Each structure stands twice: as structure tokens, then as C-alpha cells.
Length: 182
Image 1 (spheres, rainbow, N blue to C red):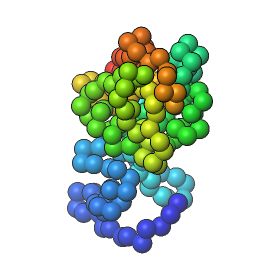
Image 2: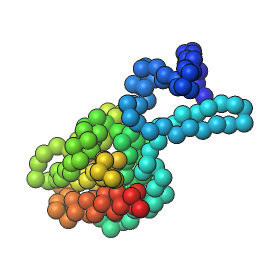
Image 3: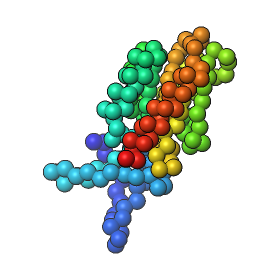
């Protein structure tokens, strides 16, 4: 664990303020759920809660199935990080923070299909990696809120991403959303 040098007192209602710099760095916004952990040494650990993170193994298997069936990189992310990926670009995606372009698409509950017919796919990760040439992206909705996205991605400019791939991404997103609700 990394010390920040910041000390805060607990108020009479048991609340503690997380400093703005830390909230900005960790992308914690008002209303975001946090998990609370304790350990035997008396440490209290706050972790940003990812509802789709509970489906981590399941999302990984779904991404692998999509990749095998469609032959392109398949990935699942929550609102902050790529939590599962399979295919040629797996290593550059997995556990990386998402780009604000993708976050905005999810906030709009959007879907996107960009292929050989033109257009530009959004950046996926925040690390400045080049955008993909082709993408089918669908937002995962749970209880009316966007909680993540399913992505089918390719670096090949001639990739045949079209209606079938978009429907596959939408089907996966709908399925994962229903799994979260159930």
C-alpha cells in the first residue's frame, strides 16, 4: 500500500472525506459505490465497487466464446477497467483503465459499429494506444444503469465488422446485464 501523507478525521456520524486529488486520480465520483475491507493489522481498505467485476470469470469465458466464434478480439469492461479480453490484442487491453471516449459511449447507453465502411473506432484504453480500425460495441445495462460494455475489436482495416457482429455484441451485453439483475 502507498502512503499519501493525507490525514483525515472521522466526524460524529462516522464519515471520512476522501480527498479530491485521490477521488480524481481513482475516478471516484459522487454516488459511486465503494467496498470496505479490513485486515488483521487493523487496516481499512476502500475499493471502488464494480458490479460487473462479480462476473469476472463468467465475462472471461463469454469473451473467449465470442473470440472463437467470430475470430476477433472480444473484451468486456466495467465503467473503469477492461475486466476480460480474449484474442490477439488481449494483453494490451486486460486490466487497463478505459478511455473517456468509451466512458462517454456507455454513459449515453450507446452502441457503435465501425468497420470497413469508414468511420473511426473510439480509443478503448486510457493509455494512448492507437484506436482500433473496426469495432462493434454495446453497453451493458443493469437495472436501467450503464455498468460496462462488450466489445468486438480488430486492428485490420478490412475487418468485416457489420450487423452480425453488432448483434453479437448487443446479445452479449443484454445477457450480462440480465445476469447482473438475476
